[in-house]
Amino acid sequence: MWANDHAVRGLGMQVVAVGAGTSTVTMAVRQDMVNGHDLCHGGLIATLADSAFAYACNAYNEVTVASGFAIELLAPGKLGDVLTAVCHEVNKSGRTGVYDVEVTNQHGTRVALFRGRSHTFVGKPVAAD
Image (cartoon, rainbow, N blue to C red; front, side, top):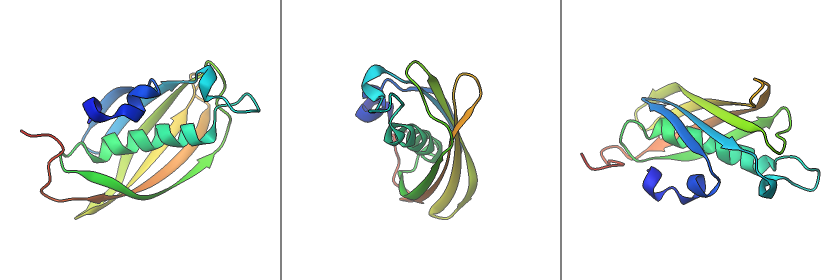
């Protein structure tokens, strides 16, 4: 996935860890990521959480996409912050799954909570063996 993930790479995200149903992804908040209030754009925080979700649910090597998500923005991200999104699987059954992501800053302050729902294309591998 990493080789073709132009959004994650373009935003400077780093995929720190991936395991079955889990992942950790970081992103440093750059000048081009802040809005008119000098805060990290909420859509970019959602993109970070969604990216962690994507890596966690695709770790089983079956193509899996989001069928929906919700996010609660709890605190602002600021220029220079390093945001960390940690995803874990809540439930996976057949072709559907539920995943939670917590986004924190470098001080451990919770910035956002995200819940994603997934749909898996069973038998369609992400990467060839």
